[in-house]
Length: 478
Image (cartoon, rainbow, N blue to C red; front, side, top):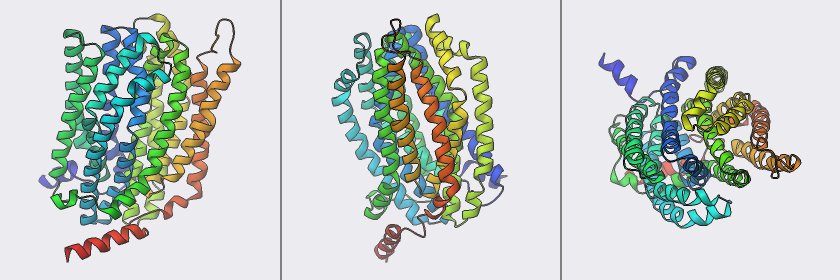
């Protein structure tokens, strides 16, 4: 019995056993965890929407694109580390696994300090550049500056939970997340509804809860001594490993930067439509976050599964995982999106009591509905390619779908739909352009994946930088 419990709660080896079973067992807690994590920002929106007002709801929503932009460094580190951890775990390389985790933790500390300083300095100037309405900008700036002050908690939770997932442990991050999400909800109500701190209260609730979750994840990570070891010497960044981490993570960071910049450009267009449309977009983004969860979940599961198997030299097993991954991911997504459409108006009413905002938000979710299936294809196949070490292909797909297709199309459609009633164009174009970009992105991703070049990107046996790192390590130990 003790053996089974250890395997259930510990790192999971995905290089053996049924592909369907391994993906399902890993994805279920991961899906629940992603949904719970989405509750952080959702609870903020619900509480400020009801207890502060629609302007506060719009302020929280307007901050979303800036937060994503300034989290680019963490995105790159987390992606590179996740690929390396899963492949070294699959290859059973204990020492390189330990060195990778130690180097990654140190880099995250440096990046947290940098983002905390830069974020506070550029927040208000960037909000003005984005045409943020006067009735929203002060609250939005206050919310963002507090989040950047506590950025280390947000960064470390996402990073360490990613490392744990790379080793096949999706359960313990879920447990910690459920606990801290409950804490976040309590603190939101206390700070906003009782203490009347407004959007600042929602921000402090998120910062405190995320900090606690990151500490719990760190304690979990340091307890896994049967898989790796974390000595002080491992915390010293290793040059070769950091170069490989940058090579793998930079495309993901560039993808996130391009995506965030494009969203900022679109957010500037959104802001021209006024506070009600901004508030509606905030609601849609929160519901959209839940609708996207199956796609992101099975994308991450595929990255871990493929990474471990590529590391173990089981390329064909990695390739055959795409079919069960797509079936499970798209199936769960279809069920979830169906529920959102059926109960959509009730969901919108959770955020606001303004009927015009509710009606518009629901109509836009109906436009996006079919796009979630397309995004399932994109995320799952991109996750498989990233797990193998091919981070460039998903980057190019993101550039094409977001920069070349979505952003210009949104402005073009807005221009074409200008009228006396809609001097800035119809706001529906924001979501029609998004749907079109999702569908085309899925088509492009499918073509790239089917070509199969990602299968040769494994870094455990083929990367000369990593071979140099192994040689360097052996020399140091001897």
